[in-house]
Amino acid sequence: MKPPKGRVMHSSLTFCGSSINLSDTEDEVINSNRYCLNVFFQTSDEVGRVFEKLKEGGKIIVELGPQFFSPMYGSIEDKYGVTWQLILPM
Image (cartoon, rainbow, N blue to C red; front, side, top):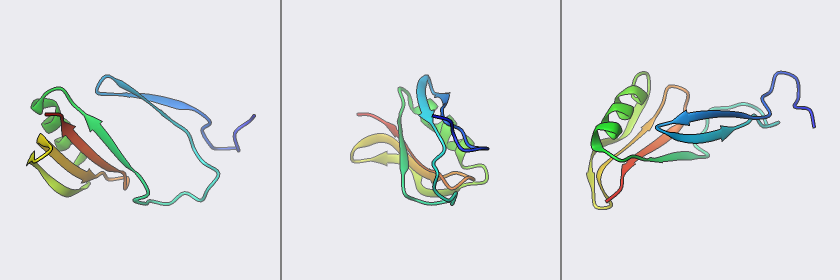
């Protein structure tokens, strides 16, 4: 199978030590809130560092802080329109 011209059939990135696989779709490209990436971290420092990077040019949805399900949580829409939830597990 050959991807349509100008599209990516398979790519991979490493985010905080975890591999994430991505590909283009044949659908029209739009910014949307159809998905949210949930990323779990091992330390509150990691959560804070990534939150600070993602908020550059982005929009904070939930300010970084404790929640009933996490000692450190924040939600942000990055400058590309991707929504992230950054979570330190209990």
